Length: 452
Image (cartoon, rainbow, N blue to C red; front, side, top):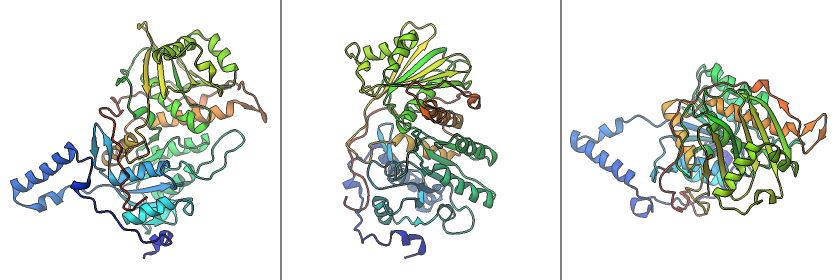
């Protein structure tokens, strides 16, 4: 065993499962077309070597905080990068090759050790070794950072101190030393700390590499399957969903931003943020008729009884004021998944779009199929699937959600309104729809190479 796989040496020998067409429950039309294309190429040329001339798949280093259970983001994402994912109603083979893994909390991550051993992927002891493959210079074509989950502390203000910047910083050191860089994907928000997050974004621009990441919710299945046109005259917007802590509210914020950035004139940045928790949430809603109307439209669309949202035992609200005068709000609410409601000029009724359900139970296709699709696109095309400015802006809003309720060391349910000139982030969305469509995936067991 090489020194690079020594970290997994304490895992007992495991028996891989041989995958064949016969045992694959999702032998899809896409696979048939792929096989037909290969056969056609051989028929036309008479040479199997022509097939081997296809471009090599980008080689990817996966750097994770923790990989210990099937709900781990690392498990959802990396398994699909290795074994394929669900996109547009079909199993889709991954177009990248995972060649190295780093796990920060390795001893607690037995599942990750088992997967890597079964797949013959080395686990390196350091971030630097993982992206250089044990050498001196950058040796991979892309980097995936999944700094989500693990035994990390939460500070007094509610920031979960996950090591995303710490991992990213070591990647940057290798980029600078090697005098070249490759695409980087960062799961969820960039960092719990604004200065770190801004540094991460700035480094992507300084070293000229595409940066992506964020929540999986903006690109998940939508009901209805619609996207707002660029330059839609949005007046005000809300998102209703679970939003009681940093990890949960980021999904809501990123979902809000994927609509808000398409408003007339594009994204102008955020002027102020205020977090309100507890019963005062509903007093604020009553004082702002636009928010009350949009919340009522969501209630009616789900046919809930009057006053349903006010029964939530953990009410909360995040108020976002944009530089162009439009407003947004995240309202904590249950049983609606993540639901957007937008007040659009010239339309009598709000536009409502919901993200509903996960294709459980926890199986190969349970979650993150959309993220893995766009990771593939990022690595193959070397272009950002959507503006990294949105990732930075969503990160900044999330940071201030926790700051608002604290002032001079004291906590208040009615948070202070924070002016945010540092969030004057302007950009225009130029992308078409980026969400997954078609049939939802089947329940398919993980392809692990060993019995769970």
